[in-house]
Image (cartoon, rainbow, N blue to C red; front, side, top):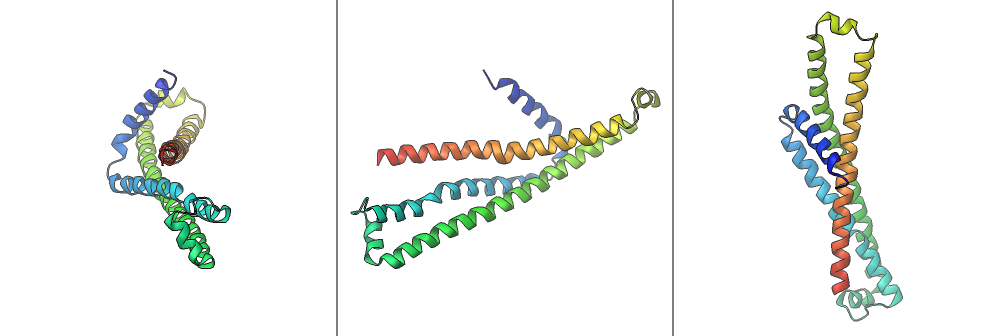
Length: 179
């Protein structure tokens, strides 16, 4: 299994951060809902453009939507263009909200984790600190937790959302091929 060790790593990270994620359930749920909204809007956005191109090329002339556009082409094409712009704007606003909420949630979780890590380091004996070079622990804690935050944000927004969008696009293509 090609990706199995990566999933184990993700599970370990999730188990490590779970105690610091308390109270973030609502924000996480809102982020997930906004992510689903973004994917849905990304799947819907091409349809008004498809209908415009269908009208211009004469494809599917017998369909009721094409008859509606053909009844008054200026208004029909204008409304389809407006629908495209509204869908793109709604997608942008949902994506902005998702990124802001998920970034805020992940920042708070990583902040709690970093504070606990600093507290743990302060409880270590003096010999532990003397065995390290000056600033090594501070640099490691700040750099590594910052990478953790960026990695979580990137994973949630880019990897998961792209995989879901791929699945939705594939299902739309299969559905469209059957109709």
